[in-house]
Amino acid sequence: MDKTQPRMRWWGWGEDGNHGPVKPGARAILAEVCGWPDGVDNPPGALADVHLPSAELPASVRGRFAAVIGADHVRDDHATLVSHAAGRSYPDLVRLRSGDVPFAPDAVLYPAASDDVDRLLAICHEEHIAVVPFGGGTSVVGGIDAFRPGFEHCVCISLARLDRIVEVDEESLTATVQAGVFGPDLENDLQAKGFTLGHFPQSFEFSTVGGWVATRSAGQQSTGYGRIDENVFGLRCSTPTGVVELRPLPATAAGPNPRQVFVGSEGTLGIITEVTLRIKRMPEHTAPDAWFFPEFASGAKALRLFEQEGLHPDIARLSDVNETAFGLAQLGSELQRKGMLSYLRLRGISTPCLMVLRYDGTSSDSRLRRSRGRAIAKELGGVTIGGVPEVMWEKHRFSTPYLRDTLLTHGVMVDTMETAAPWSTIEALHDSIKHEIERALAGRGTPAYVLCHVSHLYTAGCSLYYTVFARQETGVELDQWRAMKNAAGDAIVGGGGTITHHHGCGADHAPWLPKETGELWPRMLRAAKAEVDPAGIMNPGKLMNGPTEL
Image 1 (cartoon, one colour):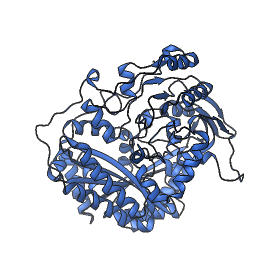
Image 2 (cartoon, one colour):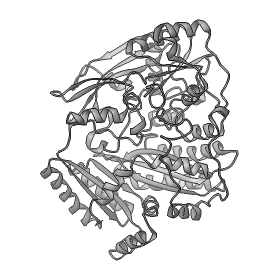
Image 3 (cartoon, rainbow, N blue to C red):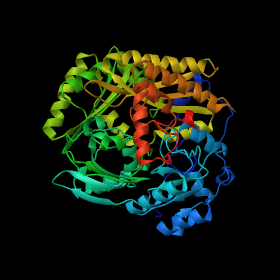
Image 4 (cartoon, one colour):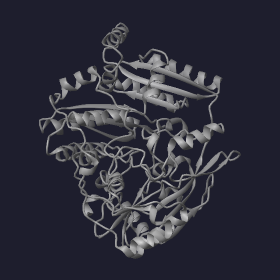
């Protein structure tokens, strides 16, 4: 396998052969709420027809890059440029599928070692060339779009060849990993040795360790195993003016933790080339569970009590009424769906909200925590159906993004967004975000179907993750999206939530950063950037240098 070839197809999510038709039940819901766009069949165009802006590296610069990594690893063929021009946000997909991509790198560089990255960044600094770091290409917030404000040239530096697991320290329970290692490769290696990182974002199959760290990623088991920022003990970062090496330490009081400056920096300060992560031993036993609650509020209260009373389920996911209905609509048959709804109605639940849980640990500990959780859930009106729904959810948990590609072909807009907030505000925030999204799209004549779930728990609060469906407005798809995104972002920050819990800021969320943190913090970030990247070449237009400055 050629390590330099992207793992995802150029126009959408994942690999060919993994998506199917929209299930009849799901289509019926979307038709009823949004209006199904009959007769629309708009597949992506041909790769050869994708239009990119004209640009070419000067021969002298290309020669300097080739002297570091070899001419074969300085590439500017059409397929390579298209596959590194954008991530997988909704605007990215609209542009890719339409064949009109307004930005792309002049070339993609493939270093094989950290020292190569150091030398490439030094050249880019000297030549005043913008740099976009690239891991797996899964950003859904415009985090890797090849912007070049004020720069004549732009290159993408792919970490595909930095794919080595350097060391597993079984005594300290840490793993030192190069940034280009993909999720499945790391997890397979660790599990063969009896360990796990326990980090499973929905992008797991196609994202890299470096990408996780650069965006402060959270995984579907992070309630139990920790977010990536909690598990970074050390890192190495190449910057245009030098290397920052932070040794792995379990804790330190030596001032503010510099590791956390680079974790979540989204390539704007430099390129993280190596990290040391905390790992855990594989659990002896996993105890799945699933419940239906009569409404979102009682389910959210159950999750709060689970976390605050120390049960700490390793997987905890609560779907609201709409998401539960959408999930049930995709059951194997209409008979199964009606049977489940009848079963729940007989037990007093007419607007069910599904919760799936998993407890990892020793056999006795995981079962004890599940037993205590069941007592809380029952007291709050929950109805258990055993662990099968959780097991089935795990089986299909990485396949959901393929549905987006199918729906786009049928003329249906699909986008996601997420936040986190204190428990005391969660119910009101859940409702207000949903209302503002619906209001914004209804005002354009495209009613929305909005789903939401909780997927990460903290003692003080939890996350909310939204999925939005609506008929696309042909020809003005991005105007429609901006109206929805602006309404959602304002509702999130205005309601006391964070603009992003785990997707990162990128270009799409950057306008809300000063609204969340105040103006002084972005200025402090820019001051740090000025020290390591005085020419501003690193990932322009992202995070603290938002799209308003392009």
